Image: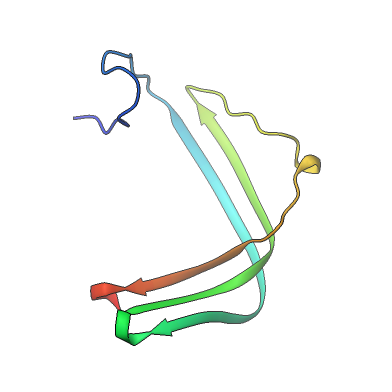
Length: 86
């Protein structure tokens, strides 16, 4: 059984492909967050100052604009807990 997205015709061919992502972040400052025990929700995150993503692929191509054309507006990394995991 294949895990295929539900777009296009079911008769479209499928192709084997592989995508490797290597991601790294550099964050600074104290953790920021919110805890709401009534609704069983907690989030904690850090503001990211530097992020890098390296992509390698086989079976298809991936093309992005050159890094010098990118502009970071806002980034954060963190974790949340909710429901049964609170």
